[in-house]
Each structure stands twice: as structure tokens, then as C-alpha cells.
Length: 121
Image (spheres, rainbow, N blue to C red):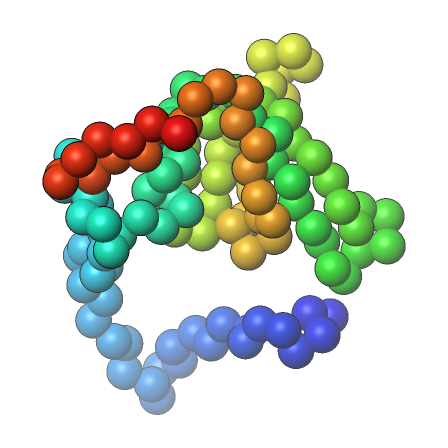
């Protein structure tokens, strides 16, 4: 179904030992003020802009009905693999997988800061 773009996940079985997963993945930012220049990933930038109104442009390559879609709302949360938006107009909440996110349009100035300096675009 995914056109071999993405590797399907594998899960441990009884004959496969469970691997230890670190409690904090590399590059995980515990505080916004600790984000170094090398760590300016999309999810970190979205976290810095929580509460701002955006349009999230998303593409679903395997869907004929929803090839391209725009979600409008306020950034509630952002993680490594997801973005959560709430739409105050219709009351809907959206969980968007980052893998499908093309770009984000902000309706106001973007916060982009790290420990060395603070920038607003």
C-alpha cells in the first residue's frame, strides 16, 4: 500500500529479544532554551510556536480522495512524528503524521530561537 516508500515496522516476538529503548532519544529537547543550532528540526520549531494559528499542507500519496489537504488550526502539540492542531472554528482536533506534512503556513511572526541567540522571522 505504501508504494515501498517507507519501511513497515517490525515488532518483537517471543524468540526475538526486546531491545532497550533509551528514555530520552538523541536530539530530544527538554527545554526550548536549550535548542542548539544543529537541533532546529521541524518539530522543535513547531513547539516554539505553540498557540499560533497555522495552515498545515499535507499530501497523502496513496489516497485518490485526499491527495492534498489543508488543515487550519492552532498548534497544540508537536512531536517527532506528529502535529496536533485544534480548529476553534469547527471544534475539530487533528492529529497529523509528520511524514505527510509538506509545509506549514503561519498567520503571524515565527518564533525561532536557540541558546545562542533569539530570532524571529
